[in-house]
Length: 141
Figure (tube, one colour):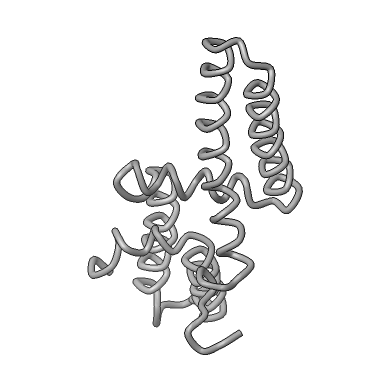
């Protein structure tokens, strides 16, 4: 992996994105071919449409077997939804508010600094899993 590659720019991740997008192209191509085959009464075009649909199904199976289908669907929803889904934003905000409450108790009896450190790790893990969630929160904390 070169220095320019990131987690979202690796060849494996680009292949996942290509196959995810190809599924839609194969679906619409197959749909167009099927309509055309029905209109013209051509078995040859109907067979081509079935091949397109089979390619779409194979891409769907490949993504699902590697556990990437849900991740791609969620990313697409976030992209067209205009940002972070509400439950992700609430999750990060809840963690940050919990950290604030712990920091307010700093210096008082019974304060556990390791609890703050564990919560910081939890926030860090959350932001790594949901990088889009940190964009809306950035600058507020």
